[in-house]
Amino acid sequence: MKHITFYLDFISPYAYLAFEQLPKALEGLSYSVEYRPVLFAALLKHHGQLGPAEIPGKREWTYRQVQWLARTHQIPLDMPAAHPFNPLALLRLAIACGSEGQANRYVCETIFRHVWRGGEDAAASERLAQLASTLKPQRDAAADDVKSELKVNTEQAIAEGVFGVPTFVVDGEHFWGLDALPMLRAYLEGDAWFATEAWQRAGSMAVGASRKG
Image: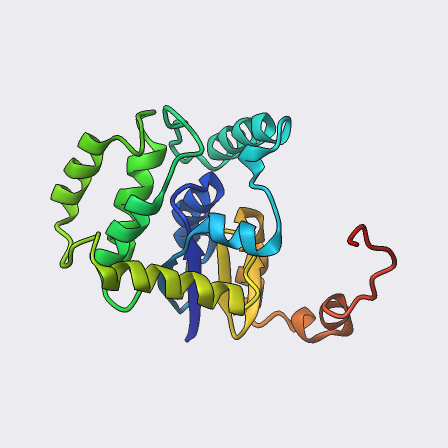
């Protein structure tokens, strides 16, 4: 059985869609998943990037595309009242419901749907209180150990080379994005292509030009 580490942030509509689509995409396969909430903004900062919602033009395209993708995959999706928003309270709540930085699928599903269904304010204090009442976390989401576990998750993701969410890690191989789910399935099925020179060479491609410096 293969083990998948799923790095996610509830702020990402692509992470939501991938989360909802994962069981169908991997139907019939034997695998296990650990869900690791991370702070997407910290990944962006580390890699010197802006998020899709921070770039005019790309922002509008992103919101239109994710609604198209949701329609295509028949996944309910409503844009929240405002986006981006600060996801820290949601990330910490997910971790407070679990242990050692992990959250279970029910918790992640409940929080994702809190954000991406209904079209309401994902960060509204009264809605957050109601969400916490529903999930009944084992620990205080504002506790230092919970904050530390989120930080460790994010640092671990960065150390592993994760640059965005959703990212699925299996055997040290990374599969990024909703559109990587067919690749992930092929890998889990043992597709020999992943052992070919084409896959290996892509990771050591020479840089022909750089805009840095």
